[in-house]
Image (cartoon, rainbow, N blue to C red; front, side, top):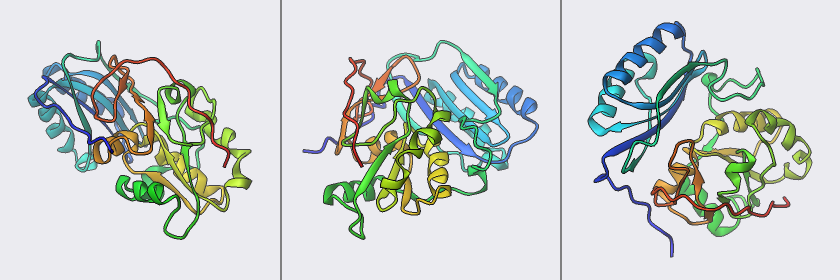
Length: 264
């Protein structure tokens, strides 16, 4: 029976994760503005800024998080900024970090520019339908492509997903090159924790001629929220002291179980 995801809003700390690919400038000024707001509301976590957009993980009391988001979205460039929310009993971050980077998710592939347009994406509900039936709407086999790092995959991944023993996301393009010929006639769905890496991996797969490729909209966390555990084994690693989230979006530290690599 499929496990229905729940979020326990009775817990005191709201955790938000979100990103947006959008052209940003005056990054020093933006960093100081966001730092001032976050410190005022005693928020902790990490905010990454670059000319290609923003990526953040923050935690604090709900009212303080909401004040921060109201100020963030007052910037016309970020008015559509969305977050994925979960709750915890304590603050999972030790301090506030706000950094300016060359890329908010490093790929070292300058032709990939998500701020200019997204790759094709698939909603969690549609993906579950494909996985339930064993193929896409045109009868093509579906291959799940895990774009995450080696240690993240060890905590959990989609059943029969193809993954790579990479240490950083910038290794992904080289790692998948050897598999391109056998993937060309299949429907590919790339995924990661919250969707940000797939914004680039999806574009990369299209650039390499894999026209039947998609990204999982919102990543694993959105899939957990909308679907639960169906077709997923294990938990999802998150980059804070909670360590992992179950498909219910509840925190649960656990040992690592490495899944088997899929032969496409």
